Structures are given as structure tokens and as C-alpha cells.
Image (cartoon, rainbow, N blue to C red; front, side, top):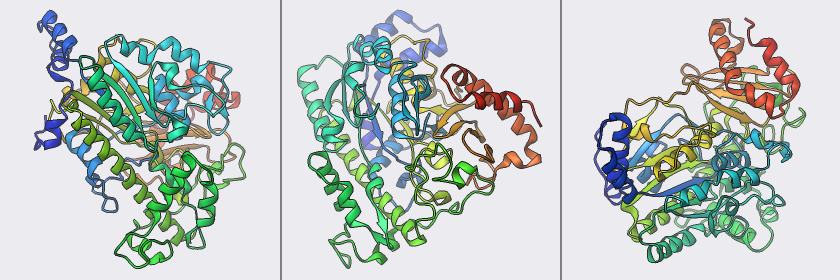
Length: 528
């Protein structure tokens, strides 16, 4: 194990105690004293805190060397925990990603397709949640379970809620929309400490930012205040959103134009430069090159190409950095509240995001596409019984599929054979541990893909041209060239076609992806 300096935060955020260490010792050393280990494990179960950000890129934090954001609290987590650098979402859009996180299944299992929306005729999520009893199973191990903040498990008219999974909700989505969630979380921690001192907790805190970038409208080389006000018009959470967006974009005190939004030069000086993959990809899928024309491309995905000037893209990138910092402030309050509760030393923290943000790459904003910016997510586990600052850059993690199995193992819930994902707990304790996984599945707005250790491979099913895409992330990580068209990648293409079919074929057949797509795979899998 790599030794790093143990920070004061790490000392305060000790988790999972001797008991889980003993349990892992049983797993890997078989002949440990089984009875006493199990007894200790029952007495020392860790609290578990799952923190979810919304639309946070995996590398937009100062601890990752990014000079355009100041994120001291995200950095606290990264420095105190184990960072998994090959973690990916199951679907790079809010709703399907979150459905996966809290069911442990792929979104397509429930008829969740973007941009098609929800078709709950195949498998009902409420029935599935009640059958799986995610929170109930954790409660059976003595836990109290709490959920606060954004849910987005379905459209507003579709009732699939944290209560269906067995959670007590301390801050609801449309009342708080992830805003004001942290004070409620801190109150819940204090209440738990007072009322249930002998019970561990499992708490979800799902924050909104940096998703507010979706409301930072830009036009004529400046922020479009009229449209921002129009999009946030209303009371309740809309009023909170309006205040949050306006305050975040306001020029700070000490700079020309402080308190306003006019001097564009200030914003441009603070903005990250245009990305190295700012131009459209060579031989990109026609679904992308024909945004707004091809059937099936939601307007929310890939938006603003052809609409923004270079200056406007820089403003978009500036605004995103500020919303990341707003998330960081909320995170800091939550971590401080956890420490103040006196329960930090036995709390395991898992930190991730539902997906990333395109942020001007390929001249697009938003999510939903098969590019690294939106599929690659942060994933950190804080376990100060282990040394902080360790980086796992080998194992492929699917945050949607792996979170529930991981939490189950931490809480002492028996492994559920019906869950596709894997617990990452063994990876926490052994630096040389390896998952039995060759690829992680990605379901995106107009197709399906896989990510292997070195490649992205995907197929678009609604486009006219260039539907098959292969990206060599070792040599060309900017995804500017389609390596499926390069004869030197013939063997890699064959391997990834085969792996794609192994990873997705069951989903395709049983959950109603277009028949033509299945036939295309079957007909092309062994070519070249």
C-alpha cells in the first residue's frame, strides 16, 4: 500500500473500524478466527454516507491539478480516500444514471431510455424496488436509512421515490431540489446521534450542482439575464434556484463591475481555455453532426454547437467552474457537520457523480453522449483505517452497478446474486486486487457502448453514417478520430465487437432495443 501523510481530516473521518478489516481478512486469509471476527463486525458496523454531485466532471477539482477551480473540500475527500480513476456512469444523463444507482440494474431493464423517456411497461421500478428492498435490507442489519436532495428517478408524474426503497426522506427533490439539503442533512445527523446512539446510519445526500450550468444562458457574448430569469421564474425551489444562479455568476467584490454581470473581460480572464478537442470529431456519427436533424437526438444533448461563439464557450466554461465551487462549499458544510456530530470517526464516505458535462468539447454542452467528458465520473471511497491518497487506475468501476453491492458488503448484507454489479470493498484492502470485469456497459441517448481498460467502443442506432465508433484512449484520448475506420485497428475492432455483444446482447434481446440494431450487431460482429 502506498503510504501518504495522514491529514487531520483522515484522522477525524475514520470508518468501518476493526470489524470490517477482520472481515476482509477472512475473505483473503480464510483461516482467520471466524467466530470472533463476525462478532466484532456486528458490533462495529460503519455509518455510510453516499454523496452524489450532479454533472461533475471527473477531473474538475484542484487536487487533480486543475488550476481553474478551487475545491478545498473535494480535495479533502481525494486526499483522505482511495480514488478510482476508471469509474464510469451506466448512462450519462441524470434520470437513467440515478435509476441505476438505486436499483443496481441497467436503466434499460426498466424501459428507461433517453431521449425517449420512461416506458414502464416492461418492468415496474416500484415493484422492483419493493422486491429488492434496498434500504430495508440495510435496516435489517441495524441501520437507520435517510435520503435527502435530488432524486430524479422518473418524471414528476411517475411516483418512484426513496420511500419506495425504504428511506426516510429528510429533504425532498422538488421542495429543495438539492438546495438547502445540507442543513437538513446536518440536522438529521444530530437527530440520529441523539435518538439512535447505538444504531449506524446509511445516509444519501444528493446535491444539485454543478447542474445549474444548465441555467447559465449565454447570448451576444454575455450572460442572457432575461432568459435566466425566465427559466427560473416562480416561487419555492425556483426562487432558490434563481438566487443561486444569479449570485454564482455575479462578479465578486474587488473586481471592476463587482455585483454585476457586464464586464466580459473579467470572466474571460478567469475561464479555462477552450479544450484541446474543441473542434468536431473527424468522421463523427451523423447523429451528432446532424444535431437537431437526426431522429432520436434530444435537444438537451449536444446543444449550442453552431450557436456559440468562442467567447460564449469560454463564458460557459467559466460558469461551470463557479458552479463546481458552489458544490464544493456545500460539501464542506456537510463534512464539517459530520465531524461536529461526533460520528465521523466511524463513517465510510462514498463520493461520486451521476455523469459529467461536455463543457465545449466537440463544441457541445450538456450530457447524454458517448464521450469521456460525460461518461467518466469521480469515484472516491474514504476509509481512514487505510492510508489516504491512494489511486486505483486499473480496475473498471461502474458507479451505477457497483454502489449497491459495495454498500451491502459494508453494511453486512448478504450478496444478492440478482445484482450485476460488484462490491469494490476487496479493492480497498488490497492494492493488487482485480475485478473480474473486462468492460463496463454504457447506455447513451442514441446507442450503446462499452469501456475497456484502453478503449471506448460504441454503436449508434439512429444515424445514417459512422454508427460504429472506436476510440484508442491510450494514444488519442481526446476522441477526435474514429479508430474503427483505421485498418491498423482491425484486431482491436474484432475484439471489441465481441466484447460488446457479450456485454449488451442480453439487454438488447430482452429489453426491446430496436430489432434492426440487434441484427446489425449479429451481421457485423465477425466482419473484418
